[in-house]
Amino acid sequence: MKNLSATDYETANAIAATLLPSDDMPGAADTPVVPMVIGMLKDRPEQFELFRSALAHVNQLARSTYGDELAQLPPPSREALVGSLSSLPELVSFWQLFRTLLMLRFYSIPKVCRSIGLPGPSIDQGGPPRGPPGRDHGSPS
Image 1 (cartoon, rainbow, N blue to C red):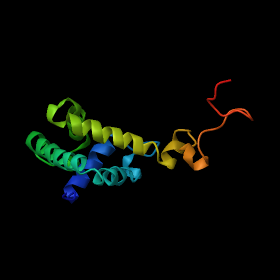
Image 2 (image 1 turned 90 degrees about the vertical axis):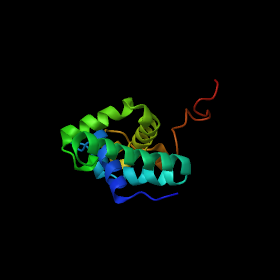
Image 3 (image 1 turned 60 degrees about the vertical axis):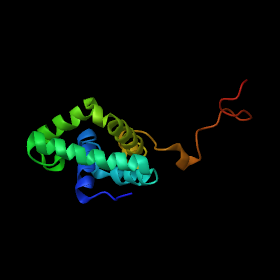
């Protein structure tokens, strides 16, 4: 299994920042979400290789369409290209994998949860709340 190049990381970060921009709340650029996703994929060689080759393909598209790599494009061009990824048959598997893992990991980051008014993952507080005393939550009455 090959490692990701610096360009691959920049491309993944550019896609993430386009999907989850920083505004009045943290965005992908304000969190370690991309390294978290990449770390998950390193344990899955087939998915990691799909991810790595798809990032190269995205940059090939960016260069052929806009003349530069995705991370170097101005926001309108980057948004247009990222917006088209889900409709490209050769990138559907990549798109579904990356978008899903990105969103799951992003919304598991405590500062992101707090910024949208959620307390964060319940595992930090011992799991989901239990029902009334003497009865487990979800048990039949």
